[in-house]
Length: 360
Image 1 (tube, rainbow, N blue to C red):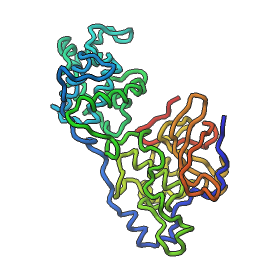
Image 2: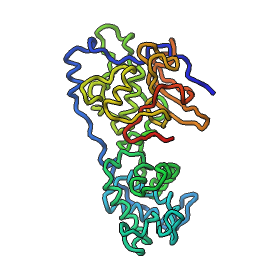
Image 3: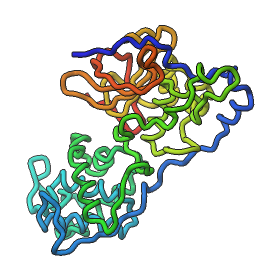
Image 4: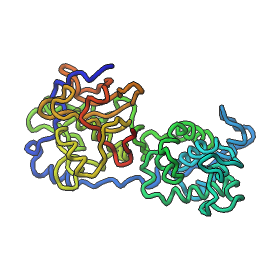
C-alpha cells in the first residue's frame, strides 16, 4: 500500500493581498458570479425505428427508453434529466414494464416500480411507459437543485430507496442509450451539465503554461482568474470545484475572494478546512471522487506552514485512493500536474461539494 510521497514544496500558497493591491482585491470581490446551471442543455428528441439497435438491449427496452425520453421532451426536461430518468428505470426494472414488485415493495409496478400509494396514479398509469415516466419526471422537477446533484442522488430524491448510490452503476448505460436514441449526437464535455466526480480528464487545468509567482517576478501578473497563484495546489483544486459545479469559464462562480460568506478569503491550503466550515459545506474522513483532499501543515509530508490540497481522482477497494493536483512534488517537478496513490487515512480531511455526502 502506497502512501503520499513528501510534499516538500510550499505548494499551497494563495495570492497575498500585498501583491494584488486594493484595486485587484475589489475586482475579485465584485466579479460577477455565473448562475448555477438551470437545465444542463435542452432536451433531445428521439430517433427510433425498427432498424435501431443498441448492443445489449432488446427492441422492447429501446422502445421504453424512447418513451421516457419522449416524456422528458414533452416536459422540456434537460438532456441530463432524460439520462437520469433512463438511469432510474434501468436500476428499477431494467427498462421493462414489470407487473410485479419485490420484498420491500410488493405493490411496485412498471418501468419505475412505482407504489400503489396514490402518488403515481392508477395501476394502468403505472403500467403505461409514457404516463409512468411523466409522473417520475414531474416529481424530479420538484426536487430543489436536482440539476447539480449527482445523478444517482437526484434519482434517490424521487424514489427514496434505501441506498442513494444504487443507480450509480447504471449511469454510463443511461448516457449511452440517450446518445444512441437521440436525433443528434451530443457531448457532456465542457457543458454546464457538470457532475461531481466526473469533472475532468487528467491535466485539463487551463493555466498549466502560465508563469508561477516565482517565475513572473515582482509586479508581474501571476494570478489566475480564480484569484490564486498560477499552478499552485489551491488554484487547481478551486478549478476542479468550479468545474464540478458547472462553472467552466470566466466569470467563475467560486473565487478566492468570494468563496466564504464571511468576507474572508479562502486563502492558502492552511485555511481551506475553515473555509469549508464557514461555507457550511460537508467534510469527512472517507474519500469521494471529486472531493478536495486537505492536508493540515506537515500531514502526510505536506508543507509545514501551508499544508496542501488536492482532489480525489479515483477510490480503490483496498483502502487507498488516487489523488490529482498541482505542486505536490519537489523541484524540478514542482508546479506541475501529478497523480499518486495515497492511503485513505493519511490526509487530515476530505472536503465535499454540497452535492456530495460521506459514504461509509
